[in-house]
Length: 328
Image (cartoon, rainbow, N blue to C red; front, side, top):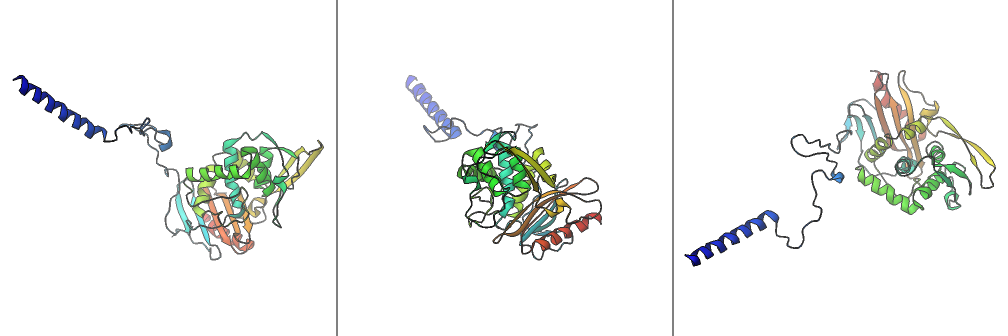
């Protein structure tokens, strides 16, 4: 009996051991110290159980994987375009929105986003020689000089209104110490917000074959940047007067004008429609580009994006074609 009982106990222990291994897996010595729980912050999950609040990644986004034309619009010249109604998340128009293209200075939307995420806008920075040095001709600048002392807020106006590549460099150096380190932050941020067809090599958008994005990714960046009140405040401005100190301590005053013709009032919009603000971009490779925010008479918001238009005038004509539907 003892022998039988011992065998039974041994058999029982063996069965239990196998059962535990089955439940726990076979990774002896390789147990995770912090296995993913359902409320892991990187998963964006806020709770578990029946009352769990699980916000899906795209729950507040306009989402499309194909072309769409719910409105009549003329975008013959544009390589890619979109017109989204943000409040209802409607895809009113989409053309090649996931095609990789060169963004030119619309890159600066991400530059502004990273800066607003990372540093205090009232932080001061001294402009370096490297920030104002360019080998390319015809580079857009905020006309900064080595040794100028400005706040990040002022640099953001120079970045988004004057489309200053020198302002982009100065911001990058203040945030990360170098353009290279700042670009790493840009690419990490792009991946985090779902802009997976985007890759940056600089903070300003000067041409590089490995520097690209899509219309849809630009929408994601713009949507994220709009969460910052300062971003919208800057975009709304037709001009901005910056007062700061030069390297020798003398006062400097500069006025930067918006590069966006809608914001300046040089291009009209239909009655009841407001052109809130936008960011332009132009290089010979990217052609004319524009990311624009509009509001209709009811206060609904729309984002319109066009990339790769041969002529600047044609770009605004094609973007105007989106707006004609708002009064119908």
